[in-house]
Amino acid sequence: MADGFAGAPPGFRPLYRQVKALLIQRISDRQWLPGQAIPAEPIIAAELGVSQGTVRKALDEMAAENVLVRRQGRGTYVARHDEARILFQFFKIVPDGGVPVFPDSRLRSVTQGVADAAESRALALAPAAPVIRIARLREIAGVVAISEYLTLPAALFPDFPGEDVPNNLYDFYAARFGITISGGQERVKAVAASSDDAAHLGLVAGAPVLLIDRIAHALDGTRIEWRRSYCSTEACSYVGELK
Image: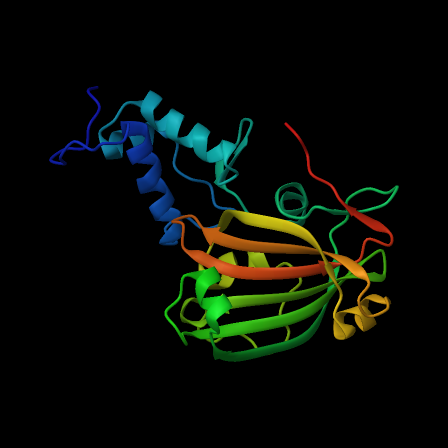
């Protein structure tokens, strides 16, 4: 079979990248939901008019990027943000001398307002665009280790709950709003704890804490979340895998 989309002009990207973009769009459009099996490679290839090898190359790259999960003998599935995946891909705070654990969360507040300059810049929003702000504490082994603040574009999260916000936000974004977090950028630096954060973390005001500043984006690159996590390092460390 000759590769190519019938009637489509040639693109500047390799064909498998064009196939990948189309399949990612299907996930973004909720045609394929988190945890759902996608059609077999021959079916996708026949539908798109490309070779099975082209489809396989696209799926392999999506699996390497944790967008898809291959299960031996069972098929290929849209990845879910379960706790094991988040620990592997997104959560890097580990108890000293212990193993990674998914933290519990204690919600402090959910409010709505208009974006300030920093929020507009971080999320690429128009000035004074509506935003949702979440403040919460995160416990590791029963001890508050993180004071966390998140900003979301309100336009992407209609009817966001004012309470009962689940601990696993990335899975919540996907299941309720059809938004899959695929990656982002993270900056880490030492800062002085504010009096409010210090009180929650059991520290004195001005004590050093680790600030993890993350901008998370969706499959199509849209900026979805600006997260600022102030982490006590009294009993925890930031651990990253070097591969």
